[in-house]
Length: 230
Image (cartoon, rainbow, N blue to C red; front, side, top):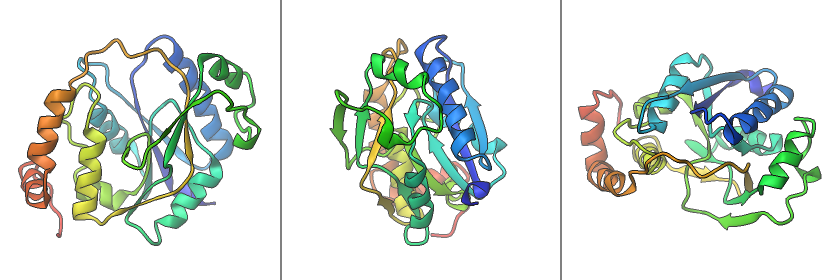
């Protein structure tokens, strides 16, 4: 089974509410549909939240050669994952979606009452808010471990939810080769808006400074003491 090669990296911060309930159900879904996969949870409880540090913490636990980096509120389709693994034959890494359906609170509550192995074609997504997103990179990525390590994982300079996924995309594309994107949906379970402070303006400046072009990326990786062959 292909799932025996996979470590699922989940950056996580408990909220005592929707996020915890969503992840409890989604974790069961991974175990039901990908029983051979290794689930690695990276918890980060400091303020401001640092998704990069949480992902890197999960990666340190992982033992497999393919990483699925996924937010804890994302519903996946097993066929989507299988296509992504196959896509690694042709592309350095895979972003397995080009649109996002945002479930309502009612839909999410209903879904959590269903068996975790339910096929997405039997889930009622009517009424979801859909975002077409060919320039969104986070949510779920499928990445060979060797390439994740080649760019030093996620950059922990980005804190407070913002631009870390873009930085990772630019580093991966520049150093390891461009991603492939699968034309399908990503499904996002409902949760309350985060009460934590965002740092988008600061992070955008860091993105432009450290990841504005390939020379800047190489300089950044050198300062992070990342060893790689360009």
